[in-house]
Image (cartoon, rainbow, N blue to C red; front, side, top):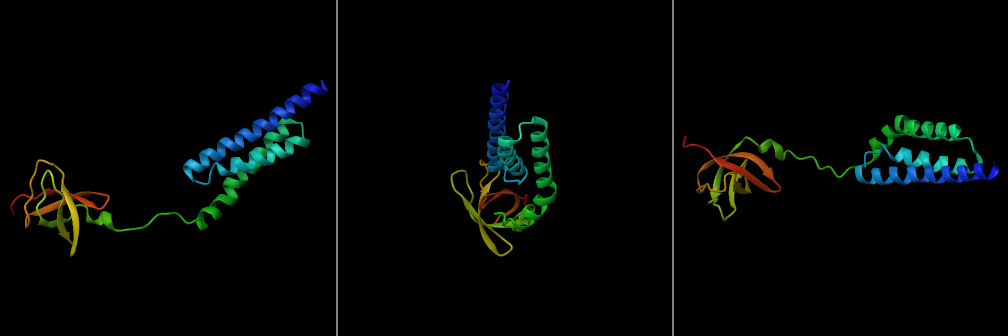
Length: 154
């Protein structure tokens, strides 16, 4: 009986460490600061499981630590963690009119002038040839290239 209890307790230590590792892998892939608290809870519960052999107590410890981390600590940590988000207003170019300054063809990237700046541009329909001086509409942006379509003669 004592051997079975020790074997079960040893298994629970590995279960909690396994939960912590899986949660850590999830956190590394999402970086949302949600599953990191399950990592902390699983690690602390594995340490507690060395001395406490009651499984329902271990479960409560895990849940309390994980839930308190999410509810109380996560909002403060998220506020101070810097993200690699660079705010730009490049999306404001979508829908605007531009003037081609270089021909755009099926085999070459052209250029358009919009808001006083020159951008690389390609045609939405690659079969279209857009001549320099022609007006275009910006449909989307792919990296640093405008995706444009020619406007009808106005």
